[in-house]
Length: 218
Image 1 (cartoon, helix red, strand yellow):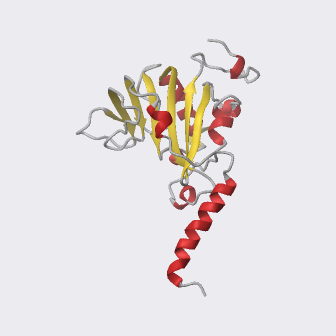
Image 2 (cartoon, rainbow, N blue to C red):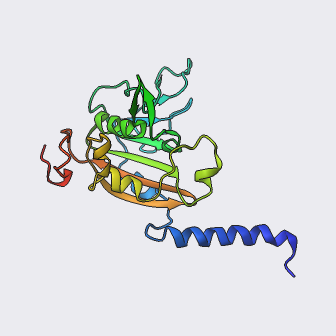
């Protein structure tokens, strides 16, 4: 008979094996090596930064945007991600980071009596304020991990395919108004969190749905 105190350990082990089975296309590994290869950079932005922006690229200057304002940190701007435009000029940053944020961005919303797509809007804005060849690093809990579902404010449940299929070479999000261009550099899992590093591959917006970004020229 299995002792009661052993059951939680067995449950965790089975969950780990189950997750590896479901997302076996992408390895479970840490992202620090690939991120370290881009250090140091000049300017970076951390979206959903909280009071202290994260700085994974060891940027010489790091800024933040968050749903709240922080008087003691003027480098953080209050912004409703996906609704407001990011308060920066085009091609302002060498890198942008997002830690446990994308799952909070609604997929659809209403503004001025029309449907908008906040997640698509945010990805457009990330592309806009990145310099050409700049990189966007994101890490977020994804299906099938329980971390993706247990927080009631998670409204954007993604899989390991979402970023690369909808915003990289295939760019399936164009039908919803995505006009940026990204290339997948690397990806992986860290426990129940999926991470991706993507690069801005073109500086010209793509509006034509029949024009694949892989053939678009600057």
